[in-house]
Length: 301
Image (cartoon, rainbow, N blue to C red; front, side, top):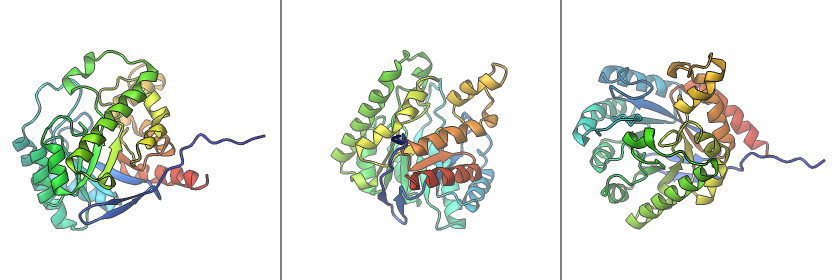
């Protein structure tokens, strides 16, 4: 009998940042989510108070999170009006400054698609710009990131948040090519602006313009994105497509956001076994434990 594995062989990369250099692929890095917003889908309003936000950030750092991703604007489905850069900065800068004052060695990421927010955040000590638009929504973002020489996460997003509920349904076999083409375009835009490949991580953008069912063929074939030659970040934590599937064991009702831990861990583990180098999560310790098991499986290939 011939044995066969369907797990991805995860390539290794060095990710050089301003103060940190991460060896990606030897173990899965855990990125913790901190939304300093009143309306984010999962924890909107919980950490809009800067003191609560800083306290939560320090808890995640004490738990051993590798990267802390701070966001000042919700991109929940149906949102029609974006926040201004001024509003974003009013929310995130005091938190960034307080966290780095308390933990100077922390590695911070800013979740923004605006060049002004990215620049001010990096000047304040952030090392990574996590752009959900993949450099597509602000014409100045690519050049700004190139000049800042920061780490960059390029996410694929299908449409804008105010369009997501009305986008035509994709055939399952069309999802991966859509994401692959979009990420390839973002990589080309980054390279043309002078962002070096070694500073770039890609993200398939689970839930971002993909309907409930469309996320599963993307997750099933995520390993094919390794053809793009960059490490992968996967963020499935608490996403709506998980809640919809978990309705099967919840009397036909979508599982509430804060009861999606097990689904989040299952999808995160699948993403790691399909080549993800970094996972973006809300629940740090469970993610670390599951990632350690997934990493041990990959090490045994």
